[in-house]
Image (cartoon, rainbow, N blue to C red; front, side):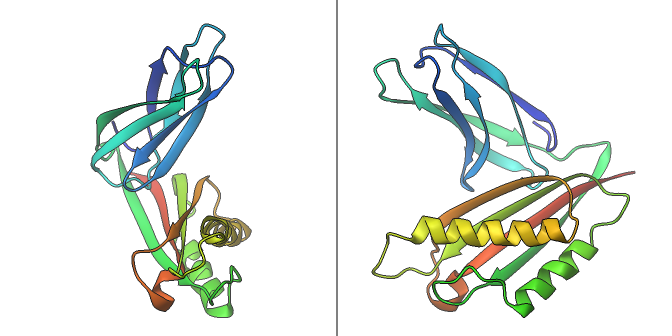
Length: 194
């Protein structure tokens, strides 16, 4: 596959009327969802965002069997850069206070500067915003808080007029501890014609 292209997906033996989720494992990135038809089949395509660096990945489809048990399939996926355009990526990280999703002045400044790096001639802009929390004894709020952090960062970039496709997710607990774990990582990717 090439970044910025679409991945064709199809299958059978799923519960009619349910959703099938298509995503990349490590890094976890949801590509899209498809609806299962009345005969238990589904088909369609999902985008491969420009934020996904060229490499080898595992794509997975998750859904429910007719007896409503989890049903999944995985396949290797090679992603390469597009040959007709130059793909650029802007990577930034912003940090948060403990148990907060509030963007302070420093974080807003980082995002504002990143948004200004996207040229007017950019096309096919995609933004990946991934939130994390610091590991603590309390676990109930991990995904909610990490998702809210990612959403707040995406909202700020939209406010700064970074237009494109947004992929926002909260990953819960970071592997790091302390202040470095309380963060959201962003990748803004876009193409420029050669």
